[in-house]
Image (cartoon, rainbow, N blue to C red):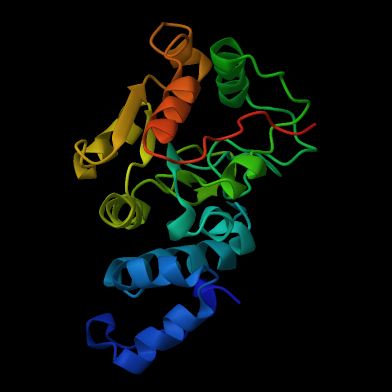
Length: 250
């Protein structure tokens, strides 16, 4: 079951405690995330997102990632484990690409250009070997929250769900990490990601910003050579945290 199996209420402003608890019980997400995001998950904004997606499914549209992977980033990286946040824009819009983790694709899917550039910068920064695949699950399991600003997209239509309401939800996610974690690294690539920086306490966390790693942005300068991976691990070590093993297993 998922958030989108819940029963609609006549007036979302009048949800009872029991109705909110019923919604949260159906959300596939670790308990610490549920508690931190309970207001956002039971909000009128989320009602609108849910209704929009239901209508899209009923109209036969292909929505990525699959509903079962919509909150995949949260399931792999509980709030209490978050050490790094890498913020993307919206999921990949090609068949089979999106898996609920920003910039990541399943092992059987060719690496998209943005991810190829990320791995190229990583190799130059810390000397990793380019993996044969683009599955970033290994990072997520170590505490890297791979978050997109929008959590869904329509097939073949980049940015198609950017005004559905997801931005408000992911604003709440950033705020929760900002408030409830210490010495977290936020990696913001691209203008949309940088806009989320207004929520982040830079006295408490490290914010690393650069242009988006897509070929259009990265090849114009401002991405390659920014060394986000070594800077992240240096900061984590300085604050007594285990650094990230960025080398993806083959």
